[in-house]
Length: 401
Image (cartoon, rainbow, N blue to C red):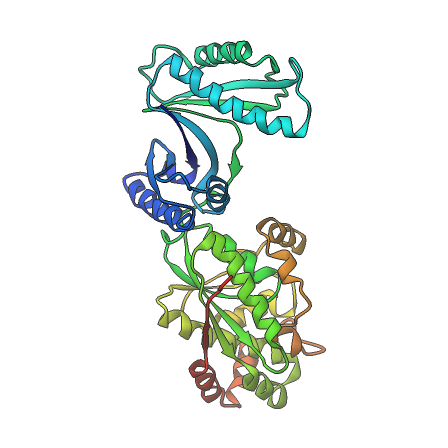
């Protein structure tokens, strides 16, 4: 019996040893969560392949495929035709069903004539007891397809599409594949707290750390009325985009205005940015510990701005007692922007709503601050009470789009 399923491939997980099953179970949970509103289905796996088998006629294949293309741990996903009889004849019939559907799509784009569509067959024979080799299966199936569809012609160098055949416990045939991000399943490598601004960098940093299997919460510092509600909404929207990849991402909005005003009015202007960053890190660490996180994540890159020079980062790191991960540390802005476009955060990030970091930027920030002078300046004023008040005033937000 031929039926449609979704076939998905894993990458890095396949290289794991005795703990491989832990990652597979986590990935299956994440896949189920991603497609929970696409219809009833079963998710199973074998030999580096995951299978989504619909259990209702209303299952939304296209939406499920789109959702799975964002799931960390998968390298690609495809709508495949499955046949539970593993014979050459069943492979041919399954391939005919797959190719017929593919030709229907192509015919919407152009008129088909004899030999006008180029194809080739590729076979993976995971079922090693099958009597034919992979090249032999490809040749037999390809010949049968040429007989069945006069509009087809073989071209192994520049085909219009590839007929992919996999001989496993069942036969699977598919053509179009949708690329997925790879990496490790979210939730398989701990939990971190992302300092999420409204800019380009921090969402990309969240994506990159999420790709390593880290689940996250986010902290956003909000300076009302110097930054408006649209600025906060922008950050919540960015969190919603990241949720496509990273799973649930709650945002904890910190009222930061009083701290920034205190720094502006009482401290050396050239150290204002560093003092602000240190206060942010202290508050973020408190949120992280309360939410069960083991590290902080920022979008900083060495030398990008005054607060991200080597000496400035030393001053920032010194104020916390947990690891600070900076996935963008060696990337330039052009690279970060390219990745932001790829993951669909760029257009939201460039919306013209300022965040707290840009509103209170000093005219001449010190680029090579000394930790001793920073601590001395900080100790002249009492920030602990203001930070306590800000921590008590945190608002929990969740993307509702």
